[in-house]
Image 1 (cartoon, one colour):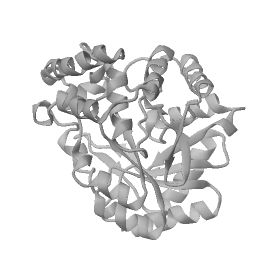
Image 2 (cartoon, one colour; image 1 turned 135 degrees about the vertical axis):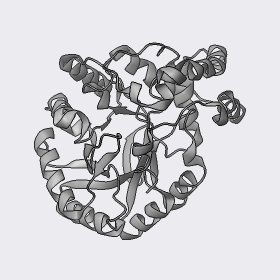
Image 3 (tube, rainbow, N blue to C red; image 1 turned 45 degrees about the vertical axis):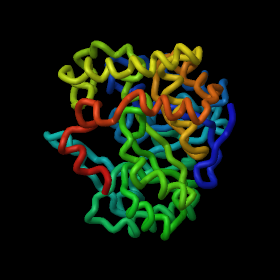
Image 4 (cartoon, one colour; image 1 turned 60 degrees about the vertical axis):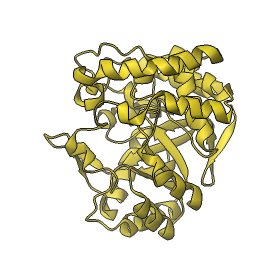
Length: 323
């Protein structure tokens, strides 16, 4: 698989989001998840994304198990900063320097490694100056515990202030045909500063597959307005335009949605999540789908932003993004 740069960090063109390998979107199978990670590495897809909060540490332990003996093949990213969740689904956030120092040691132990390649601040508490948080992360770079610094779901001003303290390799935020708020300021700021962009939920939490017509009772997507029972069928209908384009291109809607993101900028690296080898193989096929400028425009117009029903998060969770 071809490579892209996030700042100075070289990664595969597509990453693998591992969150769903923990009990988030229904039942999981750890043995199958390990096989998925191994298949990703065999395909040359080496950029793995996890976080300390996923599954209460389960996800990092699972990823650590999967990469044991293959650490040199992996560009490993994890995150810190979310410590819990309030009743209104608002994440409880600690972005203090003291917590950053404790959190990295706990993550390294769960992962079974001596360093991570990319360490993100998962969410920011605006009461803690971003300069203080990034200063502490810079100390962790100097100590060899992390190689590169990332941020998640911050605004352009915060990104700029952080980058002035220490180079930021990547910004991870939600970006897809269903969610394009980044295009107003963030994308241009990333391009100006040389910061890579890592879109999570790049296929709209599965909606762009066109197959998510019924969610299990355990599926966390019930909590999100956009994929609630009230809005899901409306949003699935919007995928029809993407499906027609995909048929013309001899691809799947998922591959078209991922190829659209890849065509937006050469320093964009989506991290679609899956716990199945068949879906991983399908996702990887997007990296060979070359789109013309006209096709990129047509795909972007297929899902008008003002027709998407529902917000991406509940109000409590929205309150801690764009900080």
